[in-house]
Image 1 (cartoon, rainbow, N blue to C red):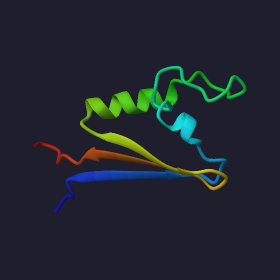
Image 2: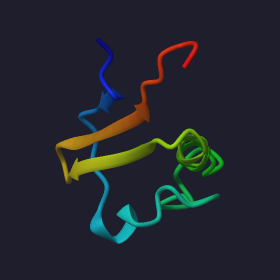
Image 3: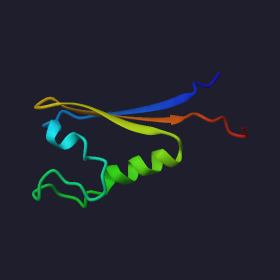
Image 4: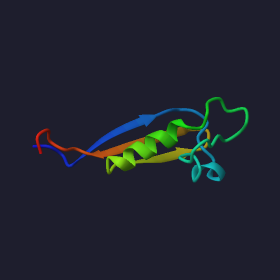
Length: 80
């Protein structure tokens, strides 16, 4: 028996994401500060890909305690 949704959880114990930034982290090229490394494409690409798969990514975060990203995608049995 297959569950209808497959979930992947990724947690860290970093600085967390402030409320000022949380609504923007999945936008293309968004970086919280100029000092932040990277291009600002990673979370955007993940969110866009999941949307095409009828999935989603959500985040739970707490300042000074870290963040948890939860990826959910439909679990479709091969051959369906």
